Length: 170
Image (cartoon, rainbow, N blue to C red; front, side):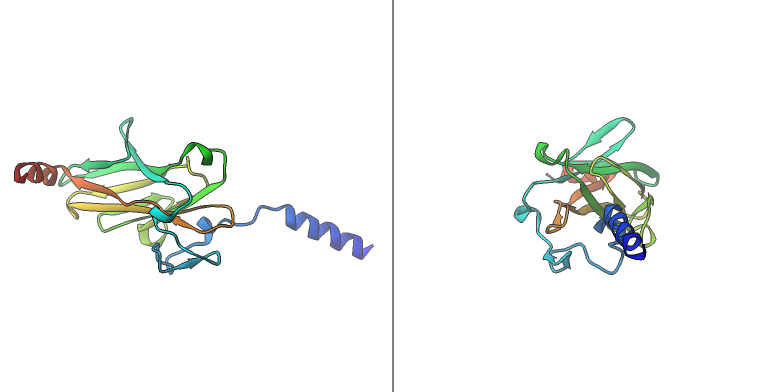
């Protein structure tokens, strides 16, 4: 009887979904190609099997190339991954990171520097403080299953007044 119960318990444990890399990848691993995650070297965007981008949204609009935010104000945005058609139905999970001036809050890791989601179309919340930084970069590490983790291209967020100054200098 004990043998049968042990086998049933083992079977049920196998059925329970394993924790994803996104939920346990914390603050001690850099999101760059010098790291080994899930036994694979992290891949740069140009070496990734698929090109995945970060998209941000605010006030009903969505951006994938760049985003501008006001100086001297706090702006709330949502960020998520934009994946190609062949990945839409796959389990694509990610960890996203921000440079100084952007703070994740929904959910937050690493004192707000990082966030994670267990699905590519699940967004995370970010507050941008225009009084702290002129430029903020976002990048993410993503994977679909137990495979090499790939990086996204960096998305540049710039303050409105910086964009105007750059346009004048051109």
